[in-house]
Length: 429
Image (cartoon, rainbow, N blue to C red; front, side, top):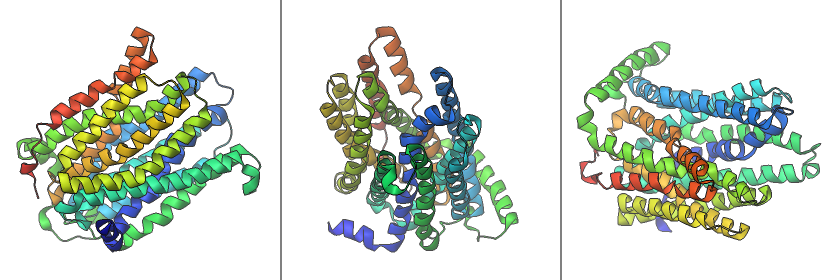
């Protein structure tokens, strides 16, 4: 408890972690919660179900493609210009404005809804590149695990609190002075924007800018960003040429790509899997809330465990639990068991993500943190490629959704094997 109190007492750490509290509401209320359902039932009203699903799929793909292409370049630009916070601010405003903009999209206007959602997702994902890179400004390497977990834990509780309010708005709109569930969902998008904006302010006021690439002073204005972009892009090219100097970072990223693919597959396929078993949608929303609120203390506990046992053994444990989750999911037969599954996922989901971030930070040169975390986020956000394909192919070949979800264990195990070759002794700090 003393170490947790210290995290809250450190103004810079708390201000940095509060951004997780701020932006996680986009992931819970919009991405995982209301946008997919509202897109199908409101903005694609009257369209064939297959067509509306395809539209939503293309919207999600465009958002992922943006990060895949842009994240490493953006990180390099920020490193070269010494303007990580400036870039974070630009992408945060993009995400905030576009989230609020969903309120204005008319019923049936799926094309505009798709465009606004893609831009909001780009703001959300792009901002995370620079947010993650700022961890080197608020913490020393021996506290990365705790600080990273602290951020994820605040994100879980913040996202869960607003999502719970938003769910209540849709269930009892009259109590909130709303005309119905549709207006409640639209207003939920606005609450995400307001929440995100307000709770981002402490980071910009209290968190310092990390060192500029090459140690130069931070210039101001468009010329500084332009010259920094050129320097950053040159650094990005050098990183490819000097890959051997960062071989542990590269090996960790490869392991991370596989096991986080499995983690994200479970996140994205859990609700669909529950529906395929005949569980009611209300129960699945409840399960999502269970995961959120258990994730808060669990992520903190993971940070403390990593500090005592080491990040790599702690991460191994978390990924191993996910393997067990896929096995348990195969035998599910009731809503109560689905709730247990949600609770177990909540215990490890934030911890795996937090310790992955802090372990990777150990291999990152501080002056190039934006660039390196660009790669990290590119893989993390673009993940869930192999897992969903395994689920689909296995399901088609066997006719069993249970075997489909069990197949996700494959990518998790591959990630664990690769992680075994990562040596913490080759840290850059």
